[in-house]
Amino acid sequence: MTAQHPSQHSPRPASHQSAGVRWPLVAGLAAMALLWPLTGLTGVGGGGPGRAFAIIGITAVVWVGVVGFGRVPRPVLTLTLTGVAFGIVATVTSMFLGGPGLLGDGAAPWMVVPALAMDAFWGFVAGLLALAVQRGLAGTGR
Image (cartoon, rainbow, N blue to C red; front, side):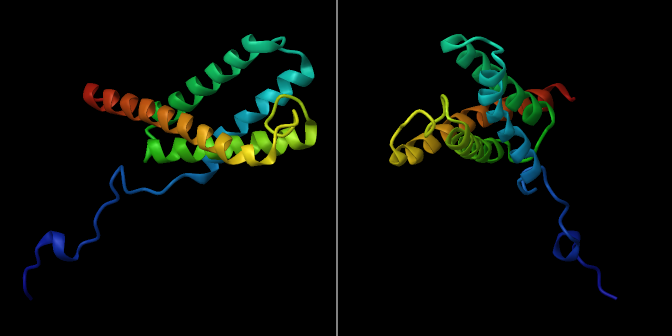
């Protein structure tokens, strides 16, 4: 029997970065887009920019907290895809319920693509913040 180098034939352990995207997590975080119609229907948070900033802030804190402190693999990709899914949920919801969503307030349908690109960008930024949280936790040994 010949000796084999351990790296030649043994399966490589899954690294933190090689794990795939957790689609149920993406869907769950994207569901936060439902805060817009829920707060609008219930009157919670009032209206105008105060409500918008509160929802954006809550969403950002939850996304970065869950992915960063949860040490979710591929945080930037995960939250970029979450941003796109968030935009899709918001667009579909506004189509059916009307209101402050993209197509609910009479915006042109061609605006969907730039809006999804903006949602992807904000997801990307949140992913960078979540990655920074993960690296900070790794540096502290937690």
